[in-house]
Length: 257
Image (cartoon, rainbow, N blue to C red; front, side, top):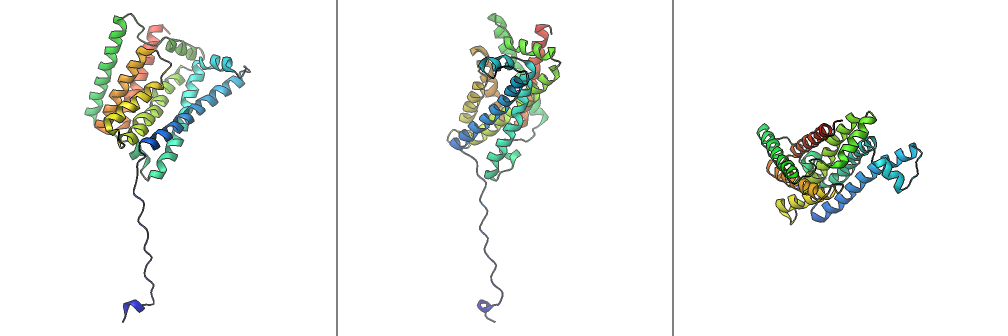
């Protein structure tokens, strides 16, 4: 029998699936801008809603007064998290890489956790010692006002949730997850990605003065190196949360709240 005259048609050749791809420098930067914008809009929506709820003027003055409130700050920080997650999901889906894999959401050993906590403690301790040596505040002054405001509104627990959970999650997913992943596989390489993502993360904290910005940059560099050597963004989320929790407790203790 001639195989070429078979009544059974040959099976259609299916095209090979597209291989996974990582967004490189510009793709990561542009999507990063959209992620940050989504976070900002989520936070701004809470602020505007609060202004309107209180019957205040929808102006720069009205918004400034509301932003200084601990309850509003807590709610706005928490509101930024789902916005960041949403845009990250949209950005990662075309890469055909699982969400957790793309962002480095993997565990690490207890040894790495212990060493990392000690390293962070030493770094923060050095900055605190320098602050005291030069006669500066160990914690930013505005943090005390925010904490007192939240406590007056019965929202201290919400402030802790915002600063020690929500903010560390979306900031680390953005900086050590999204930015580091794409930039480390571009012409920057891992060390360039660590430096640039740490700088971007520092610029997100312009509410601080130059001294605290230097401390934030050093912490960002530490987090970046830990992300590189352990491959775990969960580790940097944990460290970020512990650092913010310790700072909140320290501020509460020093202000006598």
